Length: 342
Image (cartoon, rainbow, N blue to C red; front, side, top):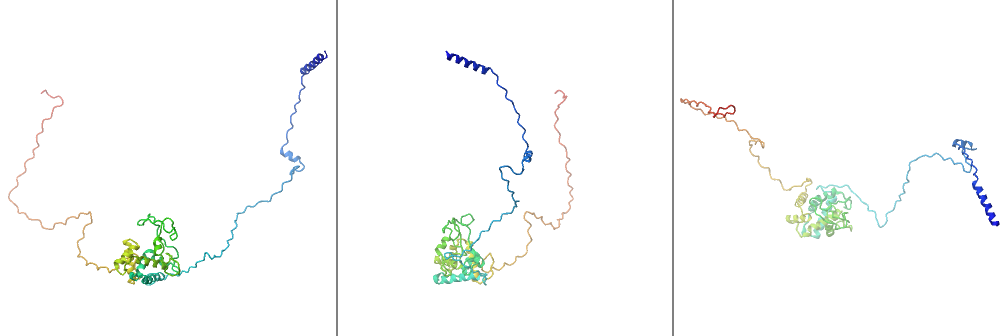
């Protein structure tokens, strides 16, 4: 019985609380924020903020160009493995043959060596001089050092077939002599192909080195190449055959033999375009003067006839008058308008 009374009281209290209205909540508008100037002025020190350290003033910066530091280069003394080669160069002296003395000495040295090595060949120095003149202009006018080595390499065109008249020769020396590992090039003052040099390489100045760029080595190798066919170069036909073996070109052979003959005859002045050294034939006797012919395409008018006109004796017969001219009769014209009946 007591339980029922407690429940009734509790229900009445809940109903009373739900029926009561809640109290209103007052709305307060926020105060306006001060601007930055007012806030800084209100601080005791406008340049400091509590809890933060004052900024350190920076010095004025100046701009300047960057100058890199140069590396220090240390001079290295040459090692024993790479000796320094001293080159002594003299001014070329041209002798009475128009050949530099240093190069002429190499030609005569090769002639003397081949006279002992192959006396039946009869190799003359002037034939070597003819080849040297065509191939390199006597080592570019004697541009060699005191040992006979050219100051700069003398290289022919690359033999890749691109130039007219040149054949294709693939590399045979791995570029050791000519600097080209794809195709061969002629080397030195006597213009040896590397494969040919490998067969006739010589040491003409006894320095223990076989160098195609040395005028003494190259001329001795050229002498051995010319004498390799067993010909007697004192004979004109054999001499031509030897030069053809050096370069299989009729123009080349003719030029070399012309220069060789000029040097043999002590000709100290020869033109850059050698011709036959034989004496030219005497000029033909002049022909009697003739009347000039008219220019091509121009028709010459005939000469006027100066002969007197023939005389004709007068006759007594009177010529008959010509017949009168009579117009032919025309056919009747057809009627087109208002024609009478037929």
